[in-house]
Length: 210
Image (tube, rainbow, N blue to C red):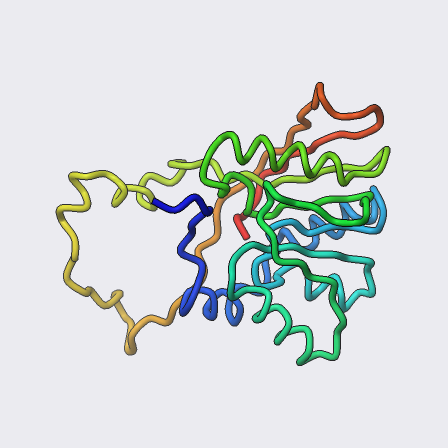
């Protein structure tokens, strides 16, 4: 067993993520949050730069961190292709340690991937440590099992039916191309943090995992 957080976002999946997962409603949402709470801003678990790249284009004071080994390189390639300069650090969320504090900290689709509750709790403590007074931590959240069809193959009895024979969609003249699934959302709530210093808050908003 490894003691490091593990995900499937590496290799071919990381490359697909970098090339095709480049948009979504979260970009405008988090941009509005930064306009409300201010800069500098920090993107924790930035992935391949879905938020980072458009915010750098907009001239924002934006720092990013990611723990996945191939993603800093993919981020750097995307930024360099547009002549953008970025401040990117490779470190897991529960070991977050930066020399700066931030008005806004965003975690888009990355919270809860630390591998244990203890790591996630430590991640929250470290994130709050990096907030300036009056700043905000903003998280998105995907409600697991909301879409029964999307999650059905996670059930043991359903997995036994795999692989299924390929069925071309009715009326399709060519094989389907890969596309990114979008998660349903539509709620927003505020989460008080009893351990956070005065003037700091955590906010959670419904949205698509990034």
